[in-house]
Amino acid sequence: MILFRHDPIGVSFEDNTDEYDPEAGTILPRMSRCASADEVRHVVFEEFQKWFTPEVAGDEMRYDSIAKELWTLWQKGRSNSPIGERTN
Image (cartoon, rainbow, N blue to C red; front, side, top):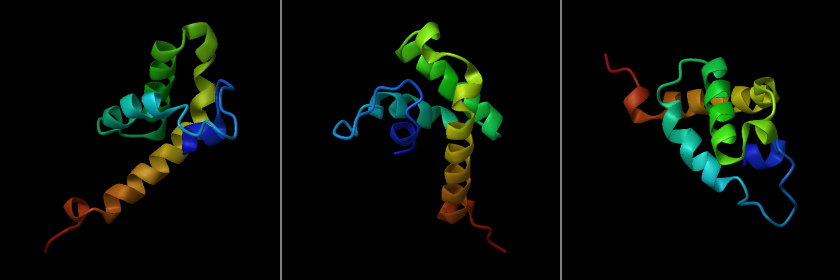
């Protein structure tokens, strides 16, 4: 999982791989309204502020690499989806 691997707030250890599942559950539904990695970064940042605190969440740029990776996977998923295919 991307959030676990990047561990932006330092809570993951090798045996708690589900640590960021709740946050992922609130980030992913919001991604459908995002049009860029920058928008994803803002969503991830907002969710971490809600789940933890603004102080613990830190600076929004802390989530930049997470957002870029999420956006890339999101785009790949959309292009592989039958809904995303063109029909001519």
